[in-house]
Image (cartoon, rainbow, N blue to C red; front, side):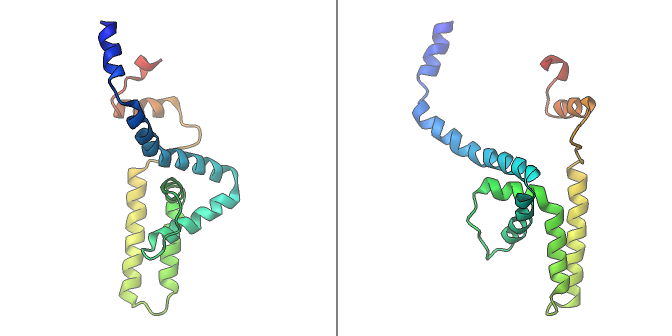
Length: 144
């Protein structure tokens, strides 16, 4: 029985699969690292505002790795929405109904974000983690 398992794993082309796995997980590794750095260094946290707003504009591409952009958007979604709204309200050329439309869209997005992402405190209690594990189909008692 163990021999059949060994034969199966020996036939897998690891030299082809491994680089693709690394390529697939690189944005997540970059994002987690960037989020951690932005929690430590206030300058990086401030830069996240710029990244989050600039990447929303279709004509601007900062050329940053996808993981960093994803982390900046995750970190600063609320602030980026506020800045977009303030920018739209400050522009004098926009018609009043467009300004109101942007305001309504920002308010709706914030409401939907709050509904989807339950606020997570830095020290989530044990029941929160157990509930999340059950949602993903894991038995918390079986993991202990």
